[in-house]
Structure formats: C-alpha cells, structure tokens
Image 1 (cartoon, rainbow, N blue to C red):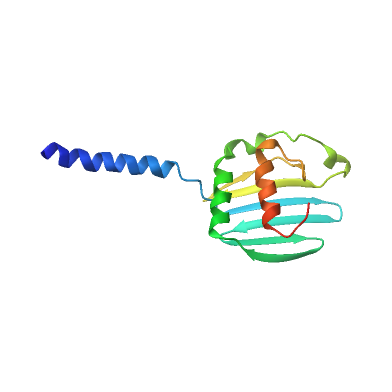
Image 2: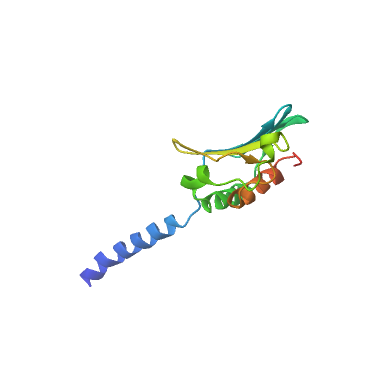
Length: 141
C-alpha cells in the first residue's frame, strides 16, 4: 500500500508531462511580408491582434481564441528549424512577376525566417500558413 502512495503521483506526473508535449507550440509573433516595386503586403499576428497593411490600406483586427489555437496548430506542424531551407516551387519574383514573400516566426528569443518565395505560391509546407493568414486579414491575394 505504501508503494501505491509513491507510484501513483509519479505515474500522474508522467502522464501530465506527456500531455503537455502534445499541445501546439506557442508563438510570440508571426509576420508575413510580401513586396516588390510599388507593392507591399504585411500581415502580423501578435497576441490576439492581427495587423495588416497593403497598398489598399491598413487595419487591425481581433483574433478569436479559436483562431489563435488553430494558428498554433498550423505552426506546430512546421519544422521551424528547416523553414529557411525550403525551396520555392517557382521563381517569378526574380523578374517581378510575383511579390517576394517570406515568413518570420518568433518564439521566445528565437526567430525563424523562411527563404523568399513567390507570394501565393509558397513551398507546400508553408501553404496552409499563408492561406490561414490571408483568410484572417481583409487582404485579397
């Protein structure tokens, strides 16, 4: 019986630790920037605020708790250490055929920056994140 008093809390702590590891990664800020000569799109999520800016205007929106959780889930599916090495599927930005786009994700004191890619045609690993941010903002691709 006295072993049960020792084993039960240990098992409980192990279960809680495993459950905590399955929660989506948090983030401090996510920034999406796309620009070329004369054009700019910037979408930033920080806390529960979304700030967006484009040539058509700028604004701020509140992001719901559910949307933040979904965004955390999308970020947790990414291998952040590797986003700088992802290859863009097209190269239209080189001839100004598309905006130069990139993601900057800040978590604690670490910054993860993607390679540049054509806006609207990111590496497949980043497509879900780009689509999600455009859906949150009032900016049309």
